[in-house]
Amino acid sequence: MLDQTATQEVPGSRLLRRSFRKTFPPAVRGEGAYLWDSQGKQYLDFSGSAGVNFIGHGVGEIVSAMTEQARSLEFADPSRFTTAIADEYAEELLAFAGEGFFGGAVYFSSGGSEAVETALKLARQYQVEIGNSERFAVISRSQSYHGATVGTMAVSGNKQRREMYRPMLREFATVNAPYCYRCAHDSNDDCSNCAKEYAAEVERAIVLSCDKAGAVVL
Image 1 (tube, helix red, strand yellow):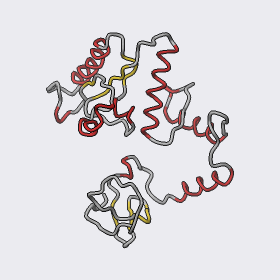
Image 2 (cartoon, one colour):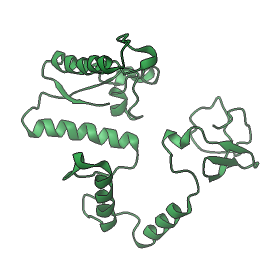
Image 3 (cartoon, rainbow, N blue to C red):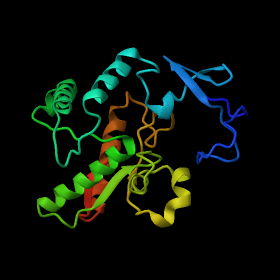
Image 4 (cartoon, rainbow, N blue to C red):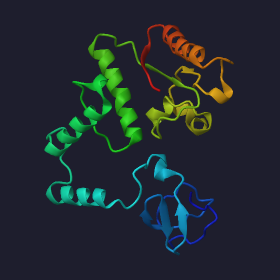
């Protein structure tokens, strides 16, 4: 995790930083789970970049694949073209996902927030296409995080992240998140009854939406 007390920031940087109350060391190199700053200090990247980098830094195989692809084609507008490499990757992902996704399809996006935002739009489009145009509400879990855009924050239950932007957000119903340490249902069994209780919360939220629920995001 980056040391927030470090002060060797790039002089005159024009980057719009996440916080102007702190200074951030410039990262110059990464290898595996480690980062190095411009002063040679090593950091264990506990944050996993933005929380999801499980591949590691500086993996040569990935760098080579990206370079090879960029030499032939770096981007083709998916509203106008398909590419063989994207088709191959989609097939690989569906095979990895298992039998439940047989015959499915993949939509690629550039990050988590965009992926969730697209899923929300797709869920809404599906409801409209089958004649349920009144269905728009999205049920999610309390204290959940689904992205940093306005749309994804509207379906995220994390109160602290939402507070500043609440006047801009739609308000949807939330249900409790399964959490053994502070279980909302105080179950003393092997969690099977808890699981049923949490599932029942989702069902009740759908009923209470009065036919407005269009999706559940977990």
